[in-house]
Image (cartoon, helix red, strand yellow):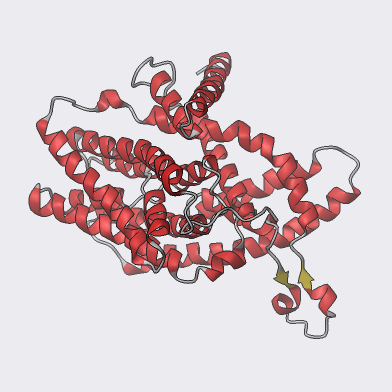
Amino acid sequence: MDYHTFFLLLAITLLAARLLAELANRFGIPSVIGELAAGIIFGPSLLGWLAPDDTLKILAEIGVILLLFEVGMDTDVFRLAKAGAKPVIVASAGFLLPLIAGFGVSFYVFELSLLVSLFIGGTLTATSIGITVRVLSDLKRRNSDEAQIVIGAAVLDDIMGVIALAFLYEFAVNGEVTLTSIGQVSLFIVLFMVLGPIVAKLVGWVIDRFDKKSESPGLLVTMMVSLIMLFSYLAHAVGAPAIMGGFAAGLAMGHNFRISLARLLHLPGMHKAHTIMDANPGLSHRLEHQMRPLIHLFTPVFFVMVGVSLDLNAINWTSAYVWVLSSTLIVIAILGKWLAGYMIRENRLRQTAIGLSMIPRGEVGLIFAQVGLANSILNAELYAAMLIVIAVTTLLPPFALKWFYTKWGDKPGLAANPPPP
């Protein structure tokens, strides 16, 4: 693609995303649906003006990384810790239920091969944290108690999904899986998610000092974007999704994240005033103010490209087999995630909200399906069936959550948003 054609496509992407998001809002629909619809309308499914081009995919990836940075900044680590094992239980149940049910139906009912059945089950485990968070934001519920559980569960779900994909890919290529390789990937991801925010906090402290002394404009946002991109690279290098780098950086820059230098450096003689690196609300507020325009610019590109990737023309609409298989898997995909919300001790309304929030597959499910197609694990019919499942489980939850919160959002069982810090 020559560069002036790219400029035209980028203009179409941004304008279509904004106009259809505004139109969706006018009808009381979450704006993310408008952006996804823009991808379907202007992509291969209808007009064919946009294609999943590599350059646009990179911009989309930047968009979702910046979105996860914002999510990390808004995530209260201590409040998340108070949720205890709940995010772990929701993530584990939301991972295992669709995996086991999807594999069982594919292998025993539709008599597909072991590898294909495992891949279908693995695809159903995905949760798109980007879509989930955006829907909760559109509904002004991102700071609610249930959203904190969902964010923690979705992050864990992403990590388990990457490990599952590594497992399946190795099985597809080598015909066997070594526990050493999977254990190594798992260990690197866990270490990154534990150490990443601490390192980012230390780097953020240095950036803040330079910014206060600098007289040139734009230093803070430039240094912070560089930090986010570096952490995204490191996340990918250790086997984690690149978006986890953005989340780790955002977590460190949040209003409430603090670390003890005395404990880190083993310096018991340091005065307490110098041992705690505060949350630095001044830096957090400056970052929010300066980063938000970038986030609002790049994030819609991600959701449009998800819609573009849902090529509905790739589906054989006349195949009874595709419809029977996809309908069965849709039920499993929805129930598997929805029931995960009922595995924790919460009131029924919050359990339902958590379950509905875990359903969207989006780009994560597409990655599974496309890897399966590219490695000849899924044939055209199976890929079409998975595309239907991903499309339904991406487009349906925003409507379901909108209806749910409109009907039940003011009930005592659902906590209202706390005031911003």
